[in-house]
Length: 86
Image (cartoon, rainbow, N blue to C red; front, side):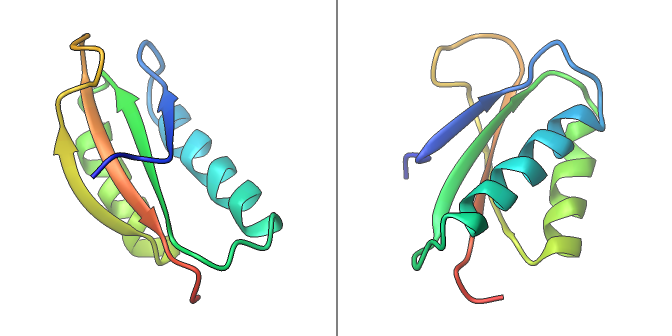
């Protein structure tokens, strides 16, 4: 599973990675997307492991998994699915 979009928020403290995720969801919704979309967030703030899944529960997105960053860099990748049905 490869995200359609990676948001590199490493070096930024929460809630900034969550805000970036929310902006990506808003942009996706404004495009009138009729399909789901996978988004990856790269973050190195330890709070992201709690904040991103919590945001997903609040906003109806699906938290898929944690992954190693695709560039083998620092931090963790979080994969989220935005669904077309709200």
